[in-house]
Image 1 (cartoon, rainbow over the protein chains, first blue to last red):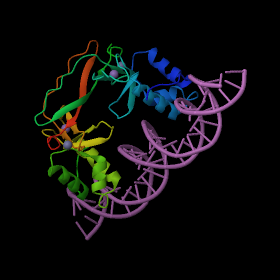
Image 2: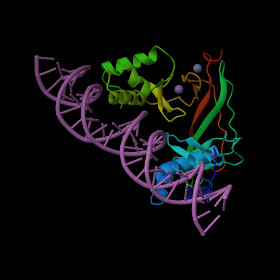
Image 3: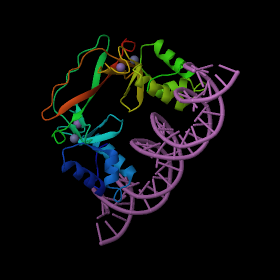
Image 4: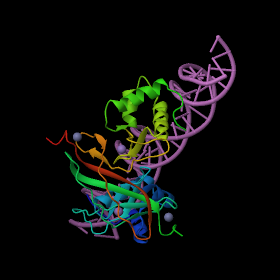
Length: 126
Length: 126
DNA sequence: ATTAGTTTTGCTACTTAGTTGCATTAACAA
DNA sequence: TTGTTAATGCAACTAAGTAGCAAAACTAAT
Ligand SMILES: [Mn+2]
Ligand SMILES: [Mn+2]
Ligand SMILES: [Zn+2]
Ligand SMILES: [Zn+2]
């Protein structure tokens, strides 16, 4: 897979991730470009950008899908085993670069893990 | 809130959690008692049992809801800050009792966190 | 610049998990 | 046994995400 053609939809969506480091939910993007892009297109572009290693995705506390820009990933290698932080006050979601280490579990082989942290963001702390 | 009346639905569902320590998804319970209980009832009973501290819930990798029996919880106190483990081979989900410690994050106040670990369960390891 | 081949898009319809409103039924305390 | 109120069933709905297919738009070759 991977992005093959530079289309308007891809440009518009990617630009949204470039102008802010925060994660953005698929639903939010659909709302933002309501008049400009079809929702199916939004889902498909996000999916493709993820395949291409440009974005990565995760689910928030309510099971809805968020995307954020990958930091050193490519089509072949992904380094996205970082936690995500969701502010319970304003709803903003960010990638956090701390390392959470998962202890081994007896009789089980661990492959991946997702960590979602919730609390108050710096903007809402005051 | 909390369970007030001992009904057939509550008994049937609770019994399912008693005979096995594993977590069970709401969807699965709806399927299991397809002929016996209405799906709305299943959702409502699970919700109420959670309020009452008898069960706790979490979302799996696909954003679907699972429930498991609480281990020392009551209506007022919840001790469910434990990770959950989902086997990628058989799909089984369990509570795990290891402690994952979340490091503090600069400028952010952490309140709760969810950890979902994926891998291979003891049954599927062979 | 035109064309042809292929990808991407829009649209409509669909799926699936979960929720809501409301009338009926079942607990249970008196 | 009866009256009150919680719990249930049913049908209709919501919301996130998917699928099929025809039309549009890239891109590369001519
Ligand atoms: Mn991230
Ligand atoms: Mn648990
Ligand atoms: Zn905030
Ligand atoms: Zn397994």
